[in-house]
Length: 269
Image 1 (cartoon, rainbow, N blue to C red):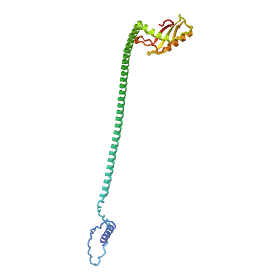
Image 2 (spheres, rainbow, N blue to C red; image 1 turned 135 degrees about the vertical axis):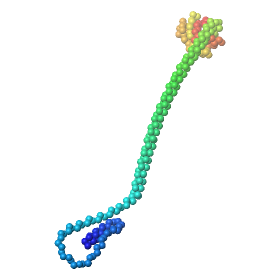
Image 3 (tube, rainbow, N blue to C red; image 1 turned 120 degrees about the vertical axis):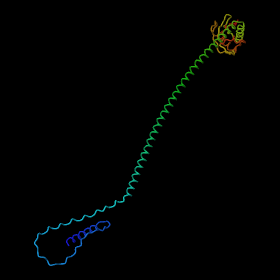
C-alpha cells in the first residue's frame, strides 16, 4: 500500500507539473503494481526479529525533456537580409558616386591643365608671330630706307646734273648777245619810268639787285652802290618798281631771279 501510495502521489505531481507548463499536454505512462489483498488470518505468534532497514525513498522520476521546435524567425531573417542588401546597395552606390566624383574632379583638372597648356601655346605662338612681324617690319623699314636712300641719291644726282647742265646753259646764254639784248630791254623800261631828280648828274651810276619772279614781277630792290644822294637812290628804286613786270626773255635760260643792273643817266646795262 505504501508503495502504491507513493506511485500515485508521484503521478499526481507529474500531472500537476505538466498542467502548469504552457504546452500541449502529453500523457504520461504510469506504471503501477496490482497488489491483491490477502484475507486476514490469525496472527502468528509474535516473532522477535530485527527490524528491517527502512525502505529507501525512491528518487523522483525526472521529467522527460521535450525539445521545443525552433522559433520561426524566417521573417526576421528576411528583413535582416533585405536590410543588409539595402545597406550594401547604398554602399555600392556611394562608392560609385564617389568614383564618378573623383573622375569628374580628375577630368576637370585635366581640362584645366589642357586649357593652361593651350593658352600657353597660344601665347607663345602669338609672341612668335609678333616677333616675326616686328622683324619683317624692321626689314621692310630698312629695305624702304635703303630704297629711299638710293632714290634720293639718284634724284640728287639727276637734279645736280640738271642744275649743272642748266647752269652751263645759263652761263652760255648770259655770255651771249641774247643776254645783252635782254638786259638792255629791262634798262630801257626802267629808264622810261625813272623820274630823275635834279641832284643827279651825267656821272651818276647806281648798281642795284632786282629780285624778280618768273613772270617778271618785281619782288624786291636792293641798292648795292650809288654815287648819288638819297633822292637819286629813292628815284632809282621807284623807277624799278614802276617798271614791274619787267620784260621776260624768250630763252628761259636767260632769266635770272636775282638780276644785277648798272643804271646811269646815259646807259643801262
